[in-house]
Length: 303
Image 1 (cartoon, rainbow, N blue to C red):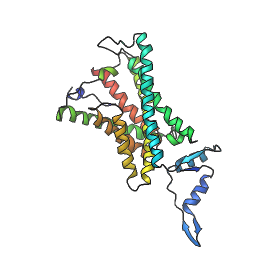
Image 2: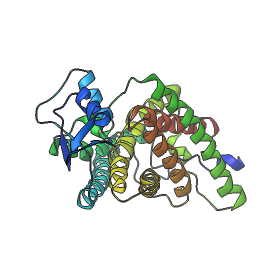
Image 3: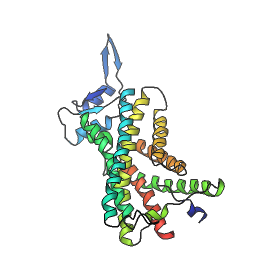
Image 4: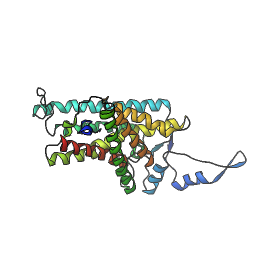
């Protein structure tokens, strides 16, 4: 979520080996064509294999994902867009009963009444439908979309630090757009302004638990991770390419031309954080939620 500019000016591998065997493959010389050599595995799911072993759980028939080709990447892109469409449909479906009870007035200048936008935010749960469908279809664990290490204090701390940095970048780009380039904007901050402390608390919770988590799951845990796996097959700078493309999609899907640059910047921060935490979603979720929650608090204070 961007800060309103008006404020500035005012193939798969079967998971059947133990971790020790994987470490042996990584470090032990093996005999190949009469010569001893060393087999090096650069597997993006080594943390997943370690985790599955460490917790003593192995599900027969479960797979991990090691490689993404062009066809699979297209499928991932399609499913990402599908998640967006599901969210749009859920939003539309929710508007009807909300209008019936007066939370949305279709014939009033103030279309959205208090609590209405907060309630509509639950439609973002649609974002997680297609990633979960993907892992179930391909018999992958939920760790394959970033639901792992969710209690890591280190990742949580990184999320807080990144969230603060995102806020700084948010303010800077907003200042550039409003004061330097003087691009006229129409603020939408009133949509997120809470009328009382109860709605404000609700907004803060939703920004972390719903908005932050669902968007990070689909864009970083699902899309960016597979984008990086695809570019690893193509050469160097796979991580950078994945971050840039995913951030572009993340910004574009918000359908806000003026806010595109801000959201692209936020996507870059979140993308680097996802890579830094080996695609555990707790860090990006906290960073994303922190940025959005502060925006809501500012909207409630100054609007």
